[in-house]
Amino acid sequence: MSFNTRPVILTGDRTTGPLHLGHYVGSLKNRVALQESHRQFLLLADTQALTDNAHDPGKVRSNVLEVALDYLAVGIDPAKTTICVQSGLPALAELTTLYMNFVTVARLERNPTIKDEIHARGFGRDIPAGFLCYPVSQAADITAFKATVVPVGEDQLPLIEQTNEIARRINRQIGRDVLPEACALIPEIGRLPGIDGTAKMSKSQGNAIPLSASPDLIRESVRRMYTDPNHLRVSDPGTVEGNVVFTYLDAFDADRSAVDALKAHYRRGGLADMAVKRRLEDILQALLEPIRARRAALAREPGYVLDVLRQGTSRARQATQATLDEIRHGLGLFTFEFDAVPRSAADGSPLYPSSRP
Ligand code: TRP
Image (cartoon, rainbow, N blue to C red):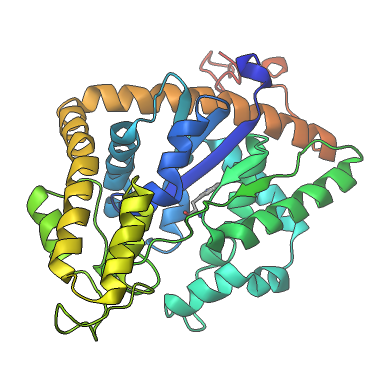
């Protein structure tokens, strides 16, 4: 399949903090594999991050580079995947404005992801309008690239559904299928719990192991990991279900039969938590050591990373602008051709910047 006929993938991350092991099993690993067979775009979603971090734009900005470093460190290859910065793609903002007319406030308020997140962030009645509308901007992200595959966690499913609803409305209005529908690609493993055993690994919960974790932090995190609180003596039979150490072994240990044997031993009794934790620690140290080393090497070359982002964003500008042009044309918007307008005022100074270089 030639590069340009490959199915298009778009996915992204809010730039609110460095990525962690949950991101790794949930999507990064998939993305590294998918870049071989797909035309993949990765969006550093800084504009979306602002919808609940408007008070801290510095954090959002600095994490653009941190997340880019994480991408490159795990093996995203900028020659195969286009990495781009959302705020550098004005076509996305313009599409968002147009799409806003094809969705109701009631529909946004009913979106289960948004409902949960509004609750979790304690917005009460003071919901930033940008936050309520970020599903529309995410629909702009996905459709602007004409992505048909969107690898995301399960919590994002309602956003894909909402995207497809908007795409159908736009297509109906225009009278032909300008925008394709997108399919979510959900990781098999499901969501990685935090080291404290709560449902989600998340930096804000302090229960995450970042991809850039030092060997000491990895050791300490595994040591603190939630196991079976009733497994008091080594000889006691233990429970594997909900025991984070075993959940992580399921996610990271390639030797399935060894894990099965450990589980049986733990259930029978006679296997210490520390023994299982030592195995997990070895696996995580081995997984993260090369990632950390590559990340550190790249961090010493910020010029290279910035070049990757500049080139990726420039390529993404072309793709997204082409879709915007189609939508503008399809909706029959008034279109200027600046080149037809006098270029200079009476005194010879330019009136308008040229629309095309
Ligand atoms: N909402 C996603 C998240 O929080 C990030 C994101 C922004 C995204 N735009 C996207 C994901 C487009 C997939 C496609 O993780």
